[in-house]
Image (tube, rainbow, N blue to C red; front, side, top):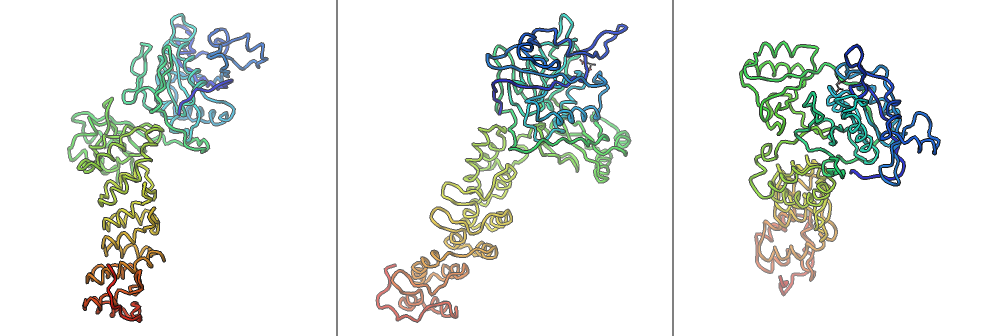
Length: 535
Ligand code: ASP
């Protein structure tokens, strides 16, 4: 969650090159060294008086106070060599990630000063390289050198330093023209204008004007206390293929040849492509060879909603890079009833803390409702949403209670396989087995018994009166499910009479025969009652 932080904040600014620090040599712009020295001369980037008064070392720059009690100190680490970002490759981005890793504990946040041409790629790569990121990483650059009279570089760099210094936004971000974007959602859209980047399919994480507005629902949450993991071994043999109408299968075949190991395929609309059999066959053969194909729409907004070819099932969102398809499109069956629509709505909620809290509060009840209705699809959707099906609702019931009560053998099997405790008692002390007995669901009782369910001593004792009632009513089926659940059918009722006594007194011969056939199970040794129990 984004939050403003107080006192002194230390940042590391990794300067990799780009126009922001370029100088003109023989009429062309080339990466320029000495960015820190330039910044030191610009009062908006360095408060020399404060630095001197506090004896800050030569390599530390300090911003003028953003708020009365806060100072942002930063060190510029200049890479060797500096790059026009068009020349940068995965190797350079790995080095940036490793630099962040090396200094991770020393600094509160990181700014990466980068050329704009490949900054969106860099931000995207870094977002995947840095797992369990708990600090703010902001990439920025400029369309014009920082020392030029008319430059966007000063605002961009100052904004990036302020965002990284004042807010904990644990993501790899890109700051440009007063907007902080999620890095892996950005694209460079203009070669000259200062508004060079946009994030067409996700609103900015923050916007800077007279006030800073942080879009809190969008900011990814910090995942516990997990350590930063830097993935530095990245596959290079990954290609990008943009489909176009009439693309020849032979051309696609040529593209898919080794060493290619993975391909991002930009398709039309919501993930569609030509259905020509020869083209599909090429894709099919490639996936059978182990090539990973990710289907990505070339539309700037929306999402892929269909699996176009085998091997396109990259559905896990790792760093907030994915826009989930609209739920109704991917799970039409959920739309059939109110329950399914409720779950669809939950699935569609963004990953803010508020949304998560709402989901967590609603999920046990929804899971119970789905289990009671035997709706496996909704149950499955809830599992995918991260629901723990062992959680209890307001009555202390697990979905297994609900499925057992509803008599849904498939749901019971799914829940048992999911590890839901078979003997949990609800707030009334009822187990799933007892509810299955009451609901008379022999199939479910069998499944629960196989999974180790048993009636508690209290349930067995209380069963006596119920057994007598069933015997009086000649309810053979009712007695059979108790027997199947492991009850002692000789258990006396509240007045000491057993079911057999009651059946004999009532002349229910079929019940008498049944009870007598259960050798050793019926406690019929007490005298026959003269008066029937008041059942
Ligand atoms: N060619 C430059 C680069 O990407 C462009 C820029 O920084 O704006 O390094």
